[in-house]
Image (cartoon, rainbow, N blue to C red; front, side, top):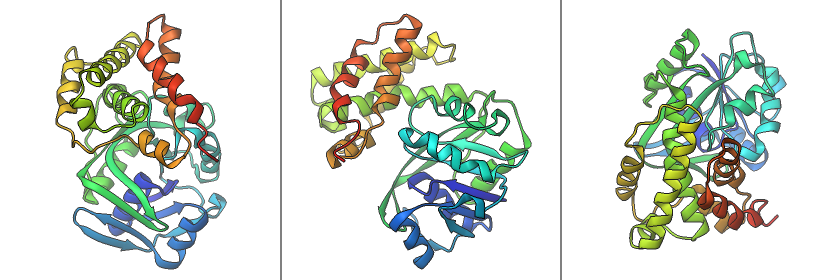
Length: 306
């Protein structure tokens, strides 16, 4: 397959290395020092099974050099979606599928307002990766799962082809009959982990050791799950209890990317996480006071420190 990664950050870079090793032609879209390093030294993945170094098919910041591809792995910060979506246009063919792996639950709808809807899918990633140095992607832990589908979850040969490619490359891309359920199930957890670890400048261990933070965490879970159900998502009736039980088993030092970005003065995705729950709940006539408060507390920092 011909595949592009837009951009080649933690998720895109991880899959770019795995898929290149499996023999696919992968165009890595990047910029600045990261792009320079990929061109000069290749793209390196530091993974649980060792280090992997590949020379991508194409490494560029000019998507017009790539031409039409079979699939685009779309993984950028929520605030960069519009600009990155426009970069995809020169790489679209009639059957190209663009799979977003972003935080939040609105990426697919946002993409479909910029790109032809026939080219847009939906997806959710379960992996912990980051750009640790220019040209280097580092993975924390062994878990890696990528769940994606057409926007309406119907079966399709192009989804099957990409799933088979990712599976054969040593990762995990299980089928789903309801991508919205998958997306919201993660969002119920992530909205709580993101909101509390960022607003309280704390870790999962701190949350589990504090009744007040634990209550706040569970309140966010409940608000986000109620919103998903109000929007017609078939969330399990036990998701609140299941999510809290799962959170209790997370590594104590764990924090969300939102908390890490806040610490380093980077821009925050808060408008698409706590802010999205508050905004969409208001539209649905539902209360979401805890998410709204988290959004208010973090909003002064959403543009970073420049």
